[in-house]
Image (cartoon, rainbow, N blue to C red; front, side, top):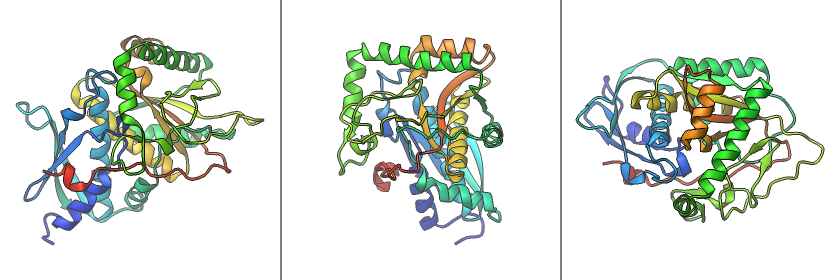
Length: 326
């Protein structure tokens, strides 16, 4: 290994770890190229979801999460990264150029990297234990470190606006045949699939957890527990940015990754909720009435403690590394 950048084996291993990032419907909409002393992230426009994500916002957030996963993986192996975002205006799909310099890995670097293979999108009911305010503040700080704003919906009026917007967006998307076809194409995948949302990770019936309606994916086989006596105390957190250009959306994905990995390291269960941001009217409502028209919402996160009796969720599949390297 040279002193100024990691060797080929290390780079491939870290890119494989980066590809564990969450993405809209597990489309994994990224490509990577490796230079002599750099790694480059590209968007893969062939994996855009035109009915779900017509302006490509979810795609950019997904790629931002992969970029942060990459940086975490290198940091844990003793390589700090320098990132040039959107380095070539003539090539808009070129999202980031990453170079390296050696640096001692910190305990936090190692912990976040170790959280990557354990993170799951958990669509099941959470327990009645509330997320401590101190832990929420840690998540808020993680988002801020990456240029984003994380707002907890502590006010019942804000929470009602968010949950109502989720239901409204679900209804509007459900009226669109193209959306239904797109969802069916990417959801309910079998064990041999390398992409899409597996049936084993989708509730077998449409569910709402307390006041929060989950996106109704088809063809699920995941058994969900009935509410019983225990309320769902999952917190809702709005991830936002001060502007809404491509760079801001990419940074939102980086902040999303930082928040999710920190939550996973703290043993919290998480579930990104993008549906209400995919409909212009409900996204505008969130911006105006929850964020006071001062920031642009990019995602809502549902965070809580998984029930003690909950079975571990299987990992979602990933494309072969050689399929995303080129």
